[in-house]
Image (cartoon, rainbow, N blue to C red):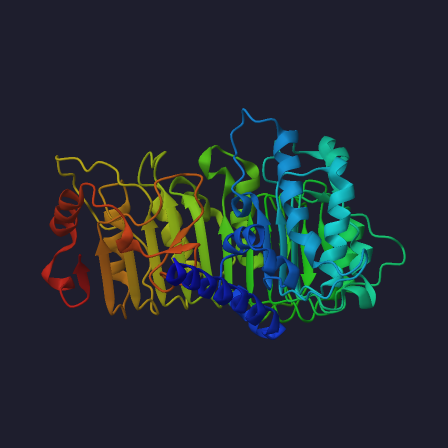
Length: 500
């Protein structure tokens, strides 16, 4: 009994010794320990360990979402109950970190709140905004779109009015990145900008044209702007120069015009909701991405004719162009007359689910190649693993002028779709300096018309939006490969053609 009691005392003393060591460890060491854990593990540990709570040590990246707390998304649970549970969990995490009601000794790199909250939750959100500011967080995100099924101008009354003025001036000097979702922004006359802001994302945000213009111009160091689903905007017109801007993304915003003076802009993403684009000063534009939202309908629309006709004018300096279209929309390039004089790389991802009805789209593609006389690299990716017919058809090369700069061509998802083999033969016979053409029967694009991930050989694996073509499925690959061999595998092309 004496031996057992002594062992128990030893264990207790070791436990007490550990508590003392925890208290004596430097703040930076404790913070480094936490930074190596996920935020979900940190939350669990703070609930179970009184010692950690007493230390008021915070993870440098506070990302508070439904997944952080394991909150159910079951629609049978009332929205108010889910919101109350989320609010209680966030408050339980933040409460120990406050030294007083208005200040904190915590410093953060990232503070993120993502959940379906509304204006009626203002009391709690205001406290979190204050915490993000006094904790000197560099990256702040308040995204309330999750679990919210109300969209459109009529729902502005439900949106939390974000106090952007709190970040204006010295109080927000630490903020370099700001993400706002499902909020309402109203700039006060005294707003003087967010001093060090470099990256801004607005998603489903209600803001007027004038307030957005004021916001962008007052943030002199802005390098990245991402605007999505902002229905309140009618245009984006800024006469003054945005000299630091390098990246601009405008999606799902029905704007009459985008006109910016951004001499250092290098990447631009937009869609067919934008009626007109003027970026004449952006001589450093190296990459542009254009997505057709109407491709899921594939209906006729005069707006598309205008967009395809004006695309070279909108992007006069672009070097790399990525297009996500339907195969039938390519025919609209037949009416385009202005040239892409600086275009070197073209990546076209085509949805062939609704067509093509015939091979007339090929002439639009041939005209597009003619409009890019200095094009060197071409990627053409079909997104569907469609059935390949047993009965062969006669394939003749499409007609068109020679191309004297095209060196490399990669086609994925190659199949017997009308016009594709004809286009391949045209390139093989008319690209006078062609060094290599790869024909891949595997369709690498996602088999989902609502998915917007580009298939690319150059950037495969480097981004979540980019997939490598050979990662696709193997449906009907044998038949597609045989179709390619029967129509393209000729002795005159053996030095440049590879059929995978």
